[in-house]
Image (cartoon, rainbow, N blue to C red; front, side, top):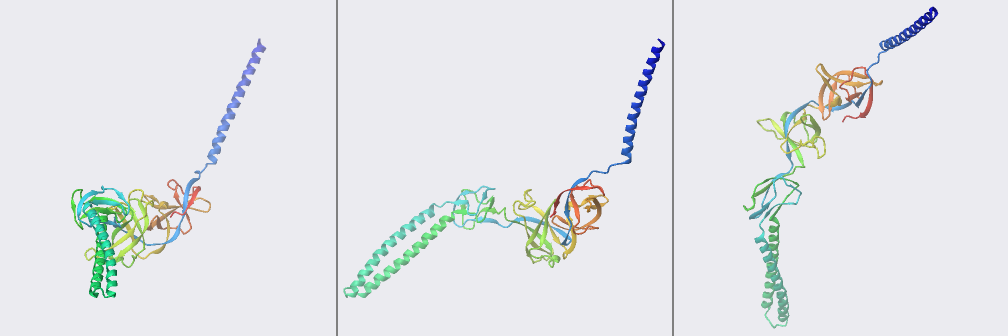
Length: 378
């Protein structure tokens, strides 16, 4: 019995020792892992960014002037003949060049055309007879069977009838032209903005029928200070801006005639064609207000970066530059002149430097980056 208890005690003590050793090993493992983490901390993971190159460009400080989008073709189409209006295109109708936009009653003119055609046929028949008569009289005059005066009279009658035929043809052509004018046609493509005459009203030459506006060929009309006349020229690059959208454009025409009171002169600026920047949002609508960025001095050479490269913070404006080791460097810059999507900066950025334009919002100085795409940023 004593030996049995002794054996069992030995077994229990061995099991306890084994469990204690296992617990100690587990504890040592956790401690080693924790120590390894404390001794070898990991930095922030590489950020995925998109970059563009800074470049040398000619820019000047800009002054923004208010402008208005206008149409190159905005006309009040008038009637050319008299008559009752029988149809007018609806407001908002889109028409192409040559499409009918109004119709005037043409019944009297159709009768005039028919009358003129009948008169021409009558005169042509009479001329055929007079030519035969003149030939006979001339033959009789040659044999002294009729006076020469009779031949002269027949020749004169034929000549006068031929002139009557010429006048009849002119009258017929005029009637046909007038009948075509009963259909008022669009001189250019556009939209019907207003019906200035209603069905049933009587129209006279010069009476306005429809206001037609070309909504495709647009431009911006703005006033520029006369003091900038030495800087502004036809074809000079400018910026169009509305809200947060901006796009490069150019001065189509400078009208160098200043107003004595406002000391300003008018400029006309091209707008992008359909499908260009800002156009899909409906900004370029006739009458819309935009701002025109004009150079206020002679352009100078500056280092420019895309506008998206600027990171705005309460303490200043920053640009993240990527060095040769693909590490982010934060530079405090001072923005200057702008042209389209490019902004001049001063503060250590040089031409050819890679600057972050996407993904820089959460970058930290010294953080490694992965380049997603190289863009020119223009």
